[in-house]
Image (tube, rainbow, N blue to C red; front, side, top):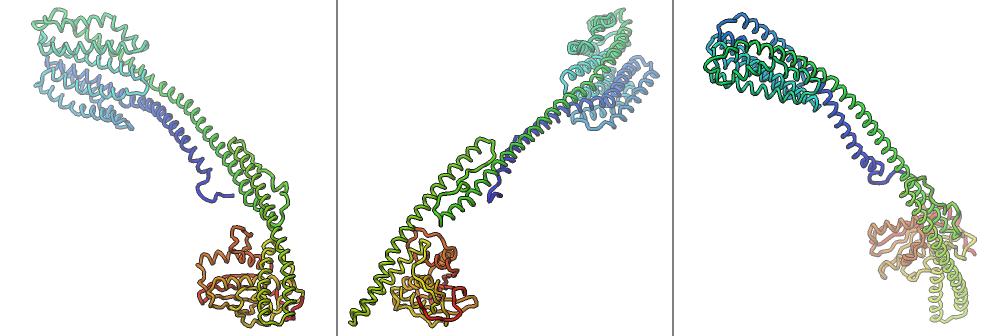
Length: 633
């Protein structure tokens, strides 16, 4: 049985389950996307190392060498060819970097900004070179011009090493710091060239050199502390090697105040010490960069493998949760549907059939009628509901049987009383008939006629009780009776019979078996017409033949009834409802409905043209005789 209204519980359970299930799927997708995104970014960093880091590193090395050559050219006026060669190497590195940078896509906003900043600084390289060629720029300004370009490259490295793996990030950041320390070493070499050319260290160069040396040592120490064993080894060996200690001694001499007036004799070895350290740092830096680059791909693959395992397990858990939830939903809906169908069958079929049977038979209920509900359910609450339904069913059956017995008992009381009254009234009518024949006094005869009429009405009321108890009155005719006599007999059973005018009916007769019931039915309708119309008005009774039988019309001139109440009365007349003791004020309608249903007569109430009501009684042709005949018992 489909649901009659509202949303089905299956839909509500589905909506209820969708909230946690969608949340679970969303959390799984978020976690998988987050972890997978980290692995993809690591693989993208490997691509950026090929397209950006490696070529920009060559650009940085070219700029560092070109910076040294340019400073030497400015302070000595020699080395133009060497400077030109370094510029050629730098240009080739820059061109390769620009080509590869155009092939790199899907960069982060931070990475894109730093890449554009580096390209913008590289666009300023021709301006720095023109200043060097014009020999009108200070050597420190030349160092600063190249350094700005190199610094832009290191800021791009900083954006590139923002990897999701913290350990890898620390190592990459330390390697970048070593690269910055290497660039500061390159700047110190350029300042050494200036100092050797001038034969002394001026305050401005001394201040710049002091800052460079301090920053280089700080970066080297911090980076060394963050590097792990594999990457730290070469740098640790370098920090204790003579080439490093000799250069640190040279740094201390250059920072000293004695170099302002002149250089010591050991200054001749400063370029050599710087060159030796440069070669060692460049070798170690290349190894570190290659080592950190080689770690990116395994880390990304490991992260993706973890994602695959965790994501696969999570996906299986999500699917299992969905399947289990839908299975429980399906089982619960099936149990509730079974309960609904069983309850509906109980209410609309079994109980309704029991009530219908008990109307005519007050015997005990059968085993099928009292059988409990059987619903296959595993949910404890539904099992409890089924038990409660069975308890209610048992109580309802018991109450229905008791009510049927009570109703049957009341009906038997009515029948017994009515039969006794009917017998007494029949004897009284015979006695009155005998007295009417024995007297000739007009006044006494008139009183006897009134008493006879009153007794006839009492007999009709007694028969009404018998009819309401689904019994038949004892009176009957064997032969057909003319319809005119039937109508006159009906009028004779009404108190205000003087107000009733019977029009001449057609010459048809009514079968003897239906005479008593039809006369009783019409008498009830005529009495209603006289009771609910003004005393000074008359009630018309007309007859007319129809293709399907005979139509008797009883019309009064009362106040009528509202349409809703009229429809309710017609519905009650058509459906032959069970007699309700609470509506004893409408006994006549119950009697009419029972009699009409017994003989297939259709009774309809309609508004009268005079403002009252017209009762239409359609007698079927099966109740009519072919030819009129004389009445007979």
